[in-house]
Image 1 (cartoon, rainbow, N blue to C red):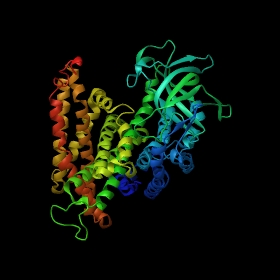
Image 2 (tube, rainbow, N blue to C red):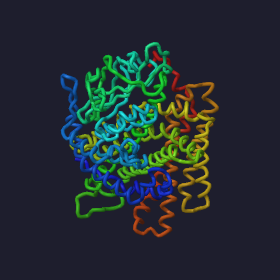
Image 3 (cartoon, one colour):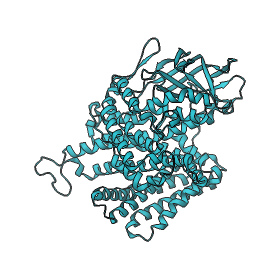
Image 4 (tube, rainbow, N blue to C red):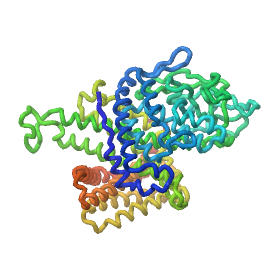
Length: 598
């Protein structure tokens, strides 16, 4: 069975040395997140992930979820007990509002904990993960009564949540949805329709499931302008606020999936189910996007999480598996062959995974901190800048880190050779589980289009210009530091490629929109490489400063950081040039064949 150790030391380095977490202790929540408290929480979260979630990962994959004739769903053996431990430990309310029973700690800390849980068991971690998204939507758009009715139980974990968007005939194009809502005359609505691909749509972990459902009120405009969002609980709360009568919503079937078998992905049928409007009529997408953006960042964490556990196990295997001799001479004379970790091509795979994981973790936590600042900072400019960063980075984190997460799971499988293809070693499950992250919450091609088509031009390009300025300033500030030359020169070259690609799009996409469409995925990955490179540049600077100050106890850790940073700059960041070349080639060859000639 695969093993896992949460990367607590790396998380603490990012929080303390890269983000300067203590600088924000004047903000709500941060004042309670002292260094010793943060270290204790992360250490306990890592232990919980390894001891409780990890042993259920292969169990969940083998057993899957089962639907009974009455539509009820049973989760794999051990899931109910594991979820009870999760709930009783209070992990679901770590960063939730104390007014409704949460602990009120920074969302940045919750993002780190979410990585650990998702590494240990991605399918299991999705149940509380979806609940967090539903909580965010109700917090932002629900009425005072709705907040009081639902949030305390959802934060506690007694009730869980879902999001219901996709229908059999429409996925990303939500303007085509058919689920209808008919006013009942008493302030409620009756919802009818079918939703598919609903993760955690039905299960036996909680007393109630609160579905957030997109539907069209009778007479509403066609397209996305006529979509509203509704709260539709599995059990209608009674006067005491407890789960009461069964609502007319049911699981019609469980999807047979490639991976994440431990999570019940359901076809949900609404047959005149009672629902309550959340937010304004015909403004449902605005409310749902609060949940979707939360989910997209969470999916980016999933990409990192699976990549991390796959990497850890690949390293262990590479140290133990003997095959051939080192090109520079025998390294294990007492054995018939050397461990495969001595071979450069195996190192290439391991270093690629490591470099993406450590920079990806930094980018996620950096962005999570921006999310906290966008809500909590007392400085209006800081709030705006943080919100701009969040909007710009959400499609990059979701798209790039899930693409890289899948690629890295495949690399880890390759390190194992034939054993990687055999179920008992666990690598093939990581490959299957990682694959969905590129698809749901907006397929990665949609994330790329969102970045190119919306985020770049938003507010006159304010966010992208701020990013250019920040990265450029970092390179300039460290230009005279010889220690930083290997990092700043490579980063500046990548930044120049990104600026050139952005200028090419500005010049060539308006008159010929297909140029933007054909360039979008390459642009997203070019952007991702520069963002990850920026994280490595900042990491190298922090590591060198700490070494210069005499951090002897951490010397090996910091030196390893510098080697990994150098690998990223030498071997991965130069790919920006290839992305720029593809972008600059335009759309003619991509769109050259008529549809009937394929």
